[in-house]
Structures are given as C-alpha cells and as structure tokens.
Image 1 (spheres, rainbow, N blue to C red):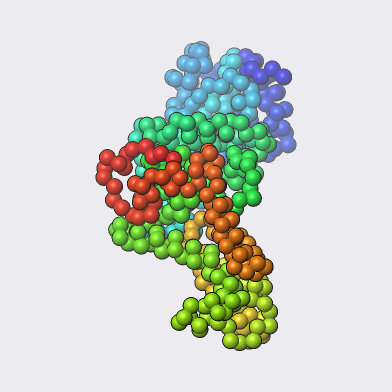
Image 2 (cartoon, rainbow, N blue to C red):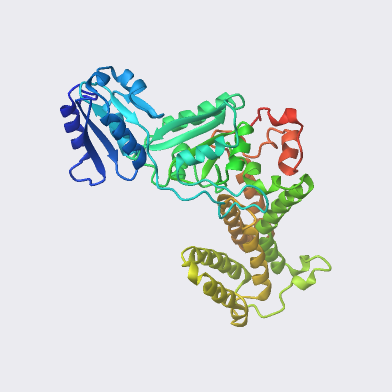
Length: 477
C-alpha cells in the first residue's frame, strides 16, 4: 500500500478509517470541520486529548477566512496554528502511530502533509516517594508511569544544554516510547553507541513488561548467573547523579522504574540515603549494608557447618550449639524457612490493605512459639533466619537481594551434602559468579577492582566529598 499522503482528503479519510477501524472503536474520533471554506478533519483518541486546548483551537479555526488558508502546509503550521508543539508528517503509517500515541492529527484538503498537534495528556498518578527506595532525609518525589513527567523530573535537576533526551521506539505493535538520557559532554561515546545499537537491533512485537522486556531484549547472554545486569531506580535524584557521572539512563514509557547503565556490583549496592547525610554517617550506612549482606549470605551455611562439626565452634561461642531435640535435620529446617519467608512476602503483596495487620499477627504467631513448640523448628534456626529475612530488606535492589538468596540456598545445599569442602567450593563459585559476570555493555562487573582504580573504589566504599574539579569529569567504566 502507498504510504504517502494524498491531496484528496476523502481518500486520506477512507484509508485512516479503515486502518484505525473507526466504526468499531468508540474512542477513536474523526471530527469533520471547515477552516476557511476548506474541508478538514481532526483525528484523535478520546481520553488522550486536552479538551480545553482542542476547544480553543477549533474556536480559532472557526474565525479564519478563505484567503487566510490559501497557503502551503508550512505556512499553515507557522501562521495559523496557535500552539507550541506542531509538526508536519508526510507518511501514513507515521500518522497512524501518532494518533494511537494520543497526538491530534489535522487533515486539510489539498495538503500532502498532515498537521500533527501534540496536545495529548495521559492518565497519571501523582508524583510521590517510591515505596521501596525511601530516604530519611532528602527529596520525596519519584518517577511515575508517564514518560514526559519522568523526563521533566530529570530536567528539573540538570539545567544544562548538554543533557540529551533521545527518543526511540521499540515494538512493531506496541510502538513503545523509549528515551535514552545522557550528558553529551561526559558520556563515553563507545558506551553510548553500544547501547543505542542494541536498542535499534531489537525486533519484538511489544514490550509487554516494559523495562523487563527491554532488558531481556538487550541482554542475549545466559541468565543462569543471578546477579543483576541492570540497575533500576524510581528516584529522579539518583538518576540525575548517575547521568552527571557519565552513565546512560533508559526511560521506558508506562514504567516508573528507570534503567541505569552500565551497572556494576558496587553501583547497584549504592543508595540515595548515603548522600543525604554527612560523609561519616553515609560511610557507616554504606559499609553496614555491605557487611550485613555478606553476613546474610554465609550465616546459615556456616551454622550448618558448625552443627556438622561441633568441635569447630570457637571457644566462647559454645552457646550457639543446639541442645534441644532436633526432629527435622537443620538443613531442611533452613530450606523450608527460606521458602516460607518468600511465601509470606507473596501473601503480603496480595493481601488487601485492611487485612495486612491481622495477617501480620497470624504470621508472627505461626512462625514463632507455635513453630518451635510443635517441634518443626528449633529456636536457634528461627533466630538466624529472622536475621537473614531482615537483612534482605537492607538492600534496595530486589534483583541483588534474590541473587544473594539463590547463592545462599546453593551454599546451604552444597554444605549440607559435602561439609567443609562443599562450603569452600560454594564460596568459590559464588565469587566466580560475581567476578566473571559482565555488564550488558561488556564492562567488568567488579570495576573498579578490575581494572583497578583506587580513587573510584574509595568513592564506592566511602562517602567522601570530592573536589569540584572531580565532580564534573568523565567516569571510566
């Protein structure tokens, strides 16, 4: 089918009505109007248009005379459309995509171009602090599902002409809008071209799961390694800081989570809260989080190892030995509780808000005295798993929390089967899973350890105040 726009408005209307199936869609409107004795037609999606702006435009058109509209499409756009966001399109498939995206299209008889008026508005919730990535002090705004609102939150923080918001589109059916955000004078050109090339090469029908679908399309490697390849955040301040460091940010329409690339193990473990306190407090919070996650990874496997070899328990720690009757092997108790904790998370996620408190009370009873008194679990096992469950929430990244959980379960099983040799092999394999992991763009996952960069490593481990000259420099990944 010919993709160009015809000068005959009747022909254009027939094609659009057929392509958009206007007769069957109540919300796709084709409004016939007359502008200066010229036959015209407006196409838009009901619910995506600012009614007051459309009303004012039609009122303005009604006062135009025949001699006013005897002009070219470019002159019509410049002189007769009193609105800021106006464009000309000469391809029919582009017009259809724009209409379905919420843009209003004006067809004028005798014009081989369609006037595109971007007066759309999307249903959106209010900007509020993210539920997961909260801070005790600092900004309380967070991204929403509307792309333009998210880019505005970043622009508000970086008022620099070098901040680039490059629009792209993915999905042959969904035509999902994607924005690649970066600082033109700070981003590494090789990194930027790598990311843009990956997005351009994506061939998919639709991004049904927003940024997760995009992530799976961008990374074609093996997903057996559970450590995350992307860093996600709902916070505009974290995104602004990352962009100023020279990183690339990908914003996907319909998603409140933003992807930051490249993502290393150190950058994923960072949190915004570290920077809203003085350096000594931020350093304490950061190091505490790292230490807590390491302890949560090895605590229960070491406990299993000590129960297998009680004579290895260090002097002064003999109290950790279980003296009560063990009805179920320790390894099975720990594995059962690992799954029970996830079951409670899923149940809490799907529990109506009015039932959250009663559910919490019932869960506390079941997993406390009743569980111990029934003989299923020993109190020491309950204590260690309680610490592990709490430690999981010290990490803002869901993906990293579950990666550590999978590694902990693997360590538990291999330690239970092969004792100390299983524990050593498990630790080595976990370390290798981190060291030999690669970012989506091919950088080292443990940078700045490999390649070694002392200054950047200190920045990741300690919350320090950098000189002004270092804050604006490119960061090597």
